Length: 336
Image (cartoon, rainbow, N blue to C red; front, side, top):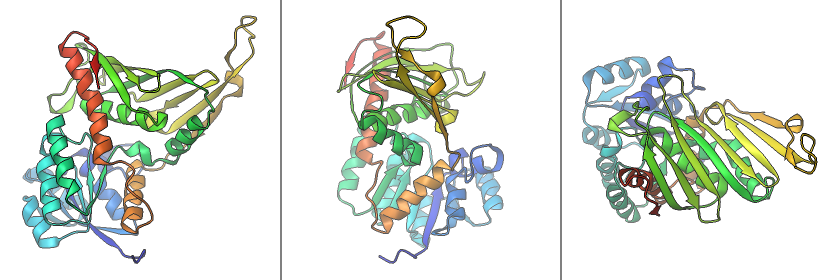
């Protein structure tokens, strides 16, 4: 395939991640799918779609491209190479089905895959009969810091992983999905069980979602504690991975990594401890959405295979569903 081809893209959904984060957020630019398509020299933003006239006008005026209220009309008329599904989770199945029906070459589907496991299963079944490239936007997978960290953990830098603590805000299905997927990616592992309880103090969650505090056990033995936080106070998205040889602290929404080795006991004789004086900090403020799009372009060019698939997104949804089902059952352990 000609690697210099410029791929034409359409964004369905003119909400925050689809379009408006670029206008009023401090997220590294490009901060929306529309902005990423417009900024990349390998892609062209040709249209935006949203049934809400007000949202469509705001986005259309900002990006100065064609606008459509109906996704089918847009895709049928323009036949883009790339379709970005940035609509609420409950609409993903319908939008994916449409893009596949029209044989779209590549599709980015926002996380979570859908709002139910059953819908996600149907989406996987639809995709099996298609040649389309499909990526679920668990975007931290595409950041170089995350990819390098996965390799270091696999190489034994932290030793055997003992415990993980993670903090998220603004809904389990909204931001908790990033935590659940990042843990599977970094540990190169799948969840075995989940246990959770609703956090009634933290009510902020889009699409009627819930905030759940819980535990997730992984097949290789590590256990992760997921804790929700009231985004009305401040946003938080952090992961702390502790192994027998050291710890990794991920902060600033995934843009800052700090590796802390273990040293012989200083505070208490004979008790080894984290050596904060020898900590190594790494920062990367590049755009996550630009990295997602770059990976998709590599896939279209034949240089890569999709890293974040529907199947992987389904495994992430199993963790979320397990936590939610456990919370309904007062913390009952749910096997995944």
